[in-house]
Length: 88
Image (cartoon, rainbow, N blue to C red; front, top):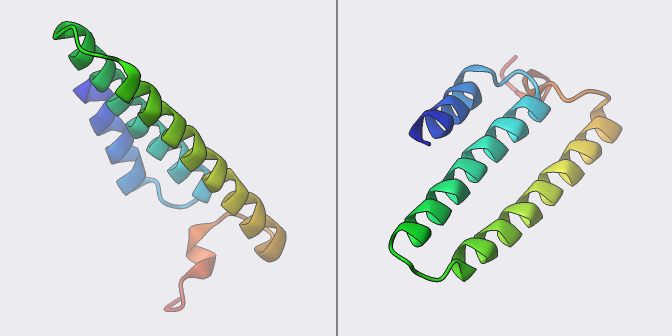
């Protein structure tokens, strides 16, 4: 599971050209944390209700990210992050 987490962080840090790729790598990180929670809670025979709450919050985060993506594409015409940099 740590491989999934670190691969998501690596893609987020190295491939920051498009906003969609950044959102997808953040979702990989969130899902790897969810799987870790689920394994931890099932290993110690604890309630998995906390992981379901975490999954609901991550779904809300994904919907917010997609709405931001649609807003950015409608206003600027593309999802390239480098277009928003004021130093270029």
